[in-house]
Image (cartoon, rainbow, N blue to C red; front, side, top):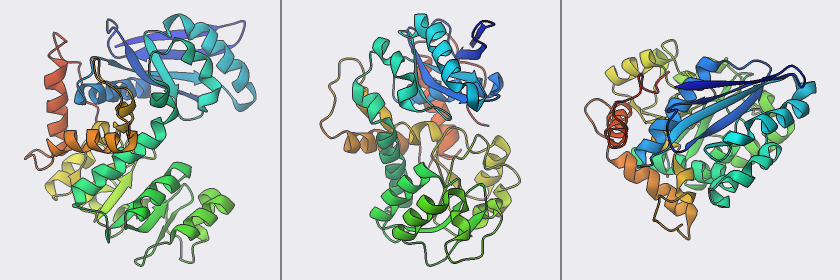
Length: 341
């Protein structure tokens, strides 16, 4: 693991770039912007990316970058980061993460060898893979009940896709609280409510809002989790009633929670496989891009997931073993530490 600091007294730049393998021919990950980002968290995001690439047999290392900047200095900080980072842009590929819009780092694309669709359609294809993973794990989505932790704009798009497959969204949570209804919320209410109230939507759906953590205890077939790393920890795990945990972001389940959920028979899907649909637009060397990228993203994820579902140690740990087997085909040793919060 290598961490490179990018600082400048002249511009005020305070940033860093983490690469999991300092000798990998190519590394890929995200760059985030916030007033204070910790390198430690970034190292685990890079590790998660490494395991994702390995899960789909790509000889690519994980990366993660951070720009520390206040809101009133973001434009200058982004420009300074791009200028300082450019020499690495061909070997370290970064997509926009939290706090950044894709357009704000578009200058990095000049040195990016990936197909345009791998960047422009990344969010859509990731979502297609997540929905397909849930459908496989549940044996279909029609009539199934789902809860979404960390409901935001991306959560609304996820809800739209799930409802389109016949699922019932029976609970959502935001930073404000949790709204739950056994009958489910219709898409119109979720769409209009979020547009008008954002995180306060939970107070506008005609039910009594409960604390944010209450979403973990909702009776549902599947619980979608991913608001942050370790969102579902040992405090929330004892309350979980859902049979399947579907991650929609890296490492949302802590190690302690995983152990507790495994003992109770709750299936925790591997986040680094479930969120890998975007790789459908970045074909492995020698392969051509499929015509239907959304269908390809679903197939890519479900094919890998199908190999670990039903494993005795649980699909997340089985997926780690699977990824490590590929890593050892091009690395002399494994990186220290699995990507579990």
